[in-house]
Amino acid sequence: MVSLNENIRALRKKLQLTQDEFAQKLGIKRSLVGAYEEGRAEPRVELLQKMAAVFGLSVDSLVGVDLTKSEPKKPGVYNRGKEVLVVTVDSQRKENIEFVPAKASAGYLNGYADAEYVKELPRFNLPMLRQGTFRAFEIKGDSMLPLMPGSIIVGEYVEKLNDIKSGKTYILVTQHEGIVYKRVFNYLDENGKLFLVSDNRQYAPYQIDGDDVMEAWSAKAYISVQFPDVETKPEVSVDQLASVVLDLQKELFQLKSDKNLKK
Image 1 (tube, helix red, strand yellow):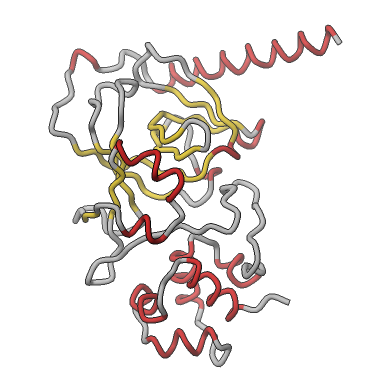
Image 2 (cartoon, rainbow, N blue to C red):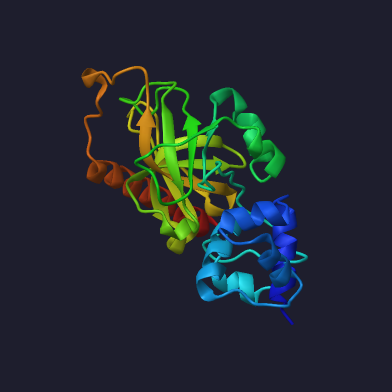
């Protein structure tokens, strides 16, 4: 039987939050957190939604799945095991935007679910981004021209991979490719793959397994001290990029068909 109070307590501890810190995130008194964790009271729906957002889960998972030991993988959701999204808040209990410099990319791959690691990242706020959970990443290389190397992409957290919209740009935190900023085409329902395309056509598109993605952030803004060079603006549209991806899919399908015929 699922115990909501035990789920709340276990997930709070997993985030390494005290009852007082957790209460501040929710905008309630610490004594209420204690009552919920001890099973002396049950939170209302609105508060359950806030808790689920802090834990990076759905309300259904919070109340219907035993999360005290392990969190099973769910279709279209990250293969994150027992990990939950870690965030920090400012003195007004508003979520910060944590910044991941390029030199910290390798460390983030190992520490993205570690509360102590995330708390050590530089952080800031942008007044135009008030609703949602955001994180900023410094990009390397010239694969996404006209955005210059060293630009900082601010992304909004994507809870479910199936919510990725084809043709939009995302920061993906992956096990094998590291942290990448690409235009993504979603084929998870068809073959479990995401196709990644660079705006700079000198870089070939490629595919990755959805299971390889640990976090996804939808690009919402960028910060740069260099203005884009209009001469480096990509000469192709998103529709043309989608056509390239479809052609690549056909080639892969034909290769598989040829192999099956030879068997």
